[in-house]
Length: 341
Ligand SMILES: *Cc1c(COP(=O)(O)O)cnc(C)c1O
Image (cartoon, rainbow, N blue to C red; front, side, top):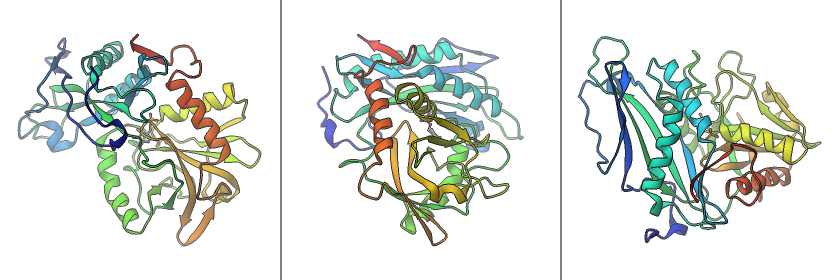
């Protein structure tokens, strides 16, 4: 029985659900892992994660499709990306096939929390890992915990999708030493001050530039950029220091194979932004949020798509990708993992 939750009034927040997956790494290997009702984590006061921030995470969603199945979207890519994050942080990799199995197990165990089709809500899935044993000299932990919890979330933007205004930031998103491509709390911790500062100045988000030359567009705090040219091409920044968004990679495929668009994955310069017709931020949470305006130190870059609605090409991309996720449009081979028929 579906939980008695008012799905349409859910925000993007944490609601404790019944079961989570926990596996521990010790003496060089992972244990089998279990589902548990215990939502509390108890670790040493000197745990590696608390002292030296050895932790990374992933984020994906489960959906109820039009025909009543429960599915999730490309979890194998989250497994792969988490392996990459772990390697960069000297953490042990949780086997990718086991990661996907564990995601399915947790969703199944909390199936009553999967919002119904058409509610606008989804089940957000949060896998993460952290160093758990005491570490005081600077070195990697030797014991780790891998967990997955789920929480139902409402539409990222309540009351419909409205274009946002963002600013070109003087802060860097991540430490400029090559950790920008991993999904880790350390990058988010670095971005919190920049976000608060942007909000205080009336901006929804920051556009971060490449720290070395400050001429190229990287990404925002938690989403990659897509741009649409006036002749209908999809352009998206290429950089080794941005997070390889699964939404962005999926949109590139959808643009080319479903919508017959030309796609350019290349360096994008700040001074070419004024020539684009549409701009959007893409990630699992919001899929695409349209950007109406970018302010670069007082200079306004206003996209022709305006401040009222998503641009027409962005909308087509949005509708096609969400159509694939919700089972209204046939998905490419391997994109949809069915959890419950
Ligand atoms: C998670 C994340 C994204 C979006 O990636 P998706 O796989 O599309 O959810 C983009 N940038 C950063 C920094 C992120 O952490």
